[in-house]
Image (tube, rainbow over all chains, first blue to last red; front, top):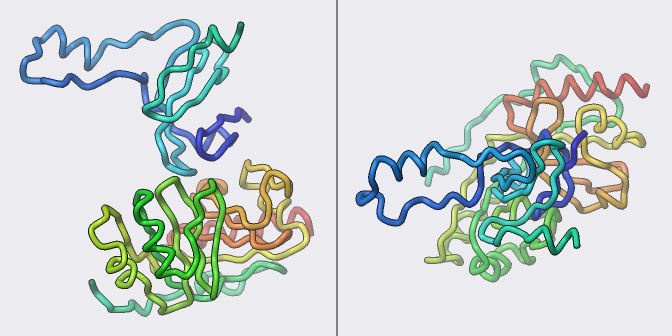
Amino acid sequence: MLLITCPYCGPRPEIEFAHGGEAHIARPQDPSSLGVEDWTEFLYMRANPKGVHAERWRHLHGCARFFNALRDTTTDQFVATYKTGEPRPDLTAVTA
Amino acid sequence: MSDVIVAGRSPFEALDGLSMPGLAAAPDRTRHVLRGRDDIHSPAAEVLGFALPTDACRAAGAGGRHALWLGPDEWLLLTPAGERVDKALAFAIGDAPHALVEVSHRQVGIILDRPDAAQVLSVGCALDFDLAAFPVGMCTRTLFAKAEIVLWRTGENVFQIEVWRSFADYLWRYLVLAGAEFA
């Protein structure tokens, strides 16, 4: 079974987790001034990369907290997990 | 807040005596779920008589009262039946933002106490039950088969399980089936 490292609870089985979409998408500060194009960008447009992707995950059947994860979409390997609010880890520093 | 105690039937009555050695319903308890940030720690400790556990997945307790860490700002408080702590806690915590809900009748307790308890649990739960990975005193919310449970290791071969009462029948039957594998 795939283990996912919860930033609070440590390594736990995959079935305890729920996927929460792409991470680091900030809601617009002033929604009423936003045009259609910008709303479309915010609501629907996602990166969908082949490779490392920053995602939100939730340890649903554990501590129930949301956190962010870097996952490689080709290998399904979780490269790093970090708490919500923390900056995206710099992978060049990790692999160097 | 209502003080009415519903005289509910035990969900185990319908099992018609189905059981196995080492499997038992836990004594009645009063349960609360407490949520809040760091500023509730010291007032809660004054009321409970011990500090809320702040290490992940650890339980603390004294004098028959226990607090189980469920999340960084969430605890399950277990007290002897009828011993409600919500009014005293709410008074002590005062204006600090918090959520405190009495959930005594939402869930029931099951005790699994047998030499192969960890093996039996492994049939439906993917956690590592080695004492190094899941020491005595560790507690966590997790999944057993399809049921979400709170699992608490109170002895090397003793596990306390808290489960929502509508899942209790399912969980009990699953545990009996699992135990049959090691009979």
